[in-house]
Image (cartoon, rainbow, N blue to C red; front, side):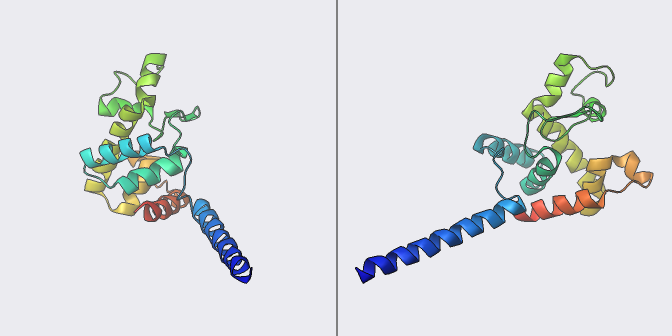
Length: 167
């Protein structure tokens, strides 16, 4: 009887430790219920294709949309997993114009593969030209915005935190 009670106490405390650890990691954003295995594989594949860190792409995706491939920001506007703007999609060559988009063009931007291609292309170009911190902020505020003095240090800190978590 005593051995069973002792085993039950050990099991109970082990479960408590697992739950506390899971909760702590979930608070850090390590677990994301929107980051499905399929989406994770797509991110890994596109990052490898563009020769950039999958952890950096995941960090941006976590901050930009919390891995929501259907995310829309009507005030920008920006779309999808990586919150791609029509201007950036146009610069990449995904769409033929960047004002008054029709549904077909929006769907092209929202497509996770297209969205990741544009984002990875942009991240790679930024990382070639700029330091990590500058490139991360430029992803959020744009090169022109950054060059005009716009900074988003809160965004930078979030991306850095998730980058460390996903590395």
